[in-house]
Image (cartoon, rainbow, N blue to C red):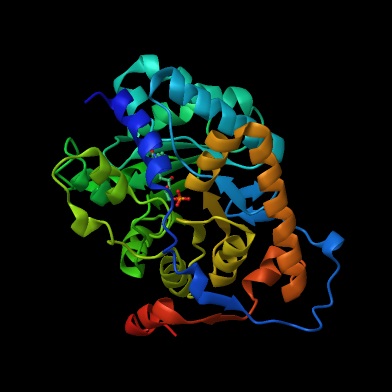
Length: 345
Ligand code: FNR
């Protein structure tokens, strides 16, 4: 199957399969306060995310490109949305444009429609330093995401079977590149052991890409005849991934934590920040809005989500995202069990 066809398939199957609601975020509850001492209109959502300045703590996560006109159109729509809201946007894996230069327009459209905003390039862990530099310059990118998607590759009939040396390649890219390099998962999450491996090779930005939203095992299994359903429930839920990473980061490591995987609404965003994340990424949720309702409604939905976030912050007594990070939360259910099992409480 051609790469371009696969890109289109991913979008279509992602929409058919939909988002699971298994991120563990429903196990998190804010402690209600009767005297929060806040004013909604004075709440600020702007935040420094590592070296990057965000107008609010959300970004559109990596999805597409490399599927000809169809993915070019989606990337244009996503970039228009990102531009109106002044939020960062990551493109999908640019490895197709590395292999086939005619695919570049489907990515470049993002910089065209989001000219002054933050744009993240995206490569796989098979990329060389030169390929990463090529992808960054294609977009004049402000940061580079390197995605790790072992389970997705295994479930894909035409996927990679050789995962040797990936950490070393990621290390070479981090050492050679002078913009932020965000190492990310794609919906299977990260443990603190993984984050430690990354920290030890010099990574300071991670996107935990947790389990519980878009599920690439379900997506790939829908595309193939021989099912590998044992991977459908495989992964570390987003709530756990963020908590594990944040606890590891507690030793003043200065890691910047991007939380993604099943972020669907303002409460999810508030919860991941209270768990220790610096920003929250939405992929499947935004794609569904764009497909079902178009650009204008998606912009309305995202504006409502940011307003909702201010209301939640007002309720918990947080005037800034730094305050929100310190808000007390209660962790129950499977997430609590998971964290106890992992020695975090
Ligand atoms: C993705 N994702 C993704 N990630 C990445 O780093 N490179 C990529 O090319 C893609 N491609 C892609 C296509 C489609 C259609 C979707 C829905 C997602 C993964 C994405 O960035 C994110 O990590 C996961 O989707 C989990 O977040 P959500 O969807 O649960 O918010």
